[in-house]
Amino acid sequence: MVIHKEGRKLLFNLFVILVIVNLLVSYFLPEQEALQNILLVAGVIFYLCILQFFRSPRIKSPEIDPKCIIAPADGKVVVIENTVENEYFKDNRKQVSIFMSPVNVHVNRNPVSGIVKYFKYHAGDYLVAWHPKSSTDNERTTTVVESEDGVEVMFRQIAGALARRIKWYIDIGDPVRQGEEFGFIKFGSRVDIFLPLDAEVKVEIGEKTKGGKTVIAELP
Image (cartoon, rainbow, N blue to C red):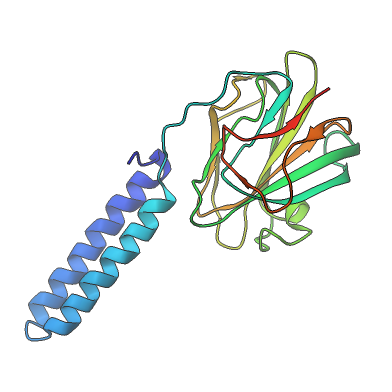
């Protein structure tokens, strides 16, 4: 299992803390074997839960297709609707939202290849990711990539009630490649994609996606 760089320091510190706690309990309460065993098992389970949050499996993305929009995250499709996008396009767009639960891989991948035309970080609230206002009120990043065909696609990383740390590795002017990693959301949350109205959505509400693999829409 490959551990993502965002989790390595946290996991090391957590391991040291758990070891120290168990050693202290064993030293000061040597006769409390039941307590020692409970703490040991609980610590192992807790550590494994945190460990799986930061797994980063190697994937082989499909061949780059400028007409295809690839899922930016593992998760479940929770929104497919036409909406007004007011930050950059300021017009009607087709929105697809993917909810990342705590058991999903939290790596975020570029849905298209192209050049980053716009990027902005927004501080904000920490509403639950499925709240209607989370897309505009929560801590988030907004990225717009222009493909080689001149089509602009927007995607947002959105923090939730648990996910309070968004990481990104792109900036305005950077070339990006479809399927490659552009960011990470610790402990899950949500990614929104805003597409032209004539894009043909290929997923349905409730469908599970694989970041960097699942085709969520096709451009005309």
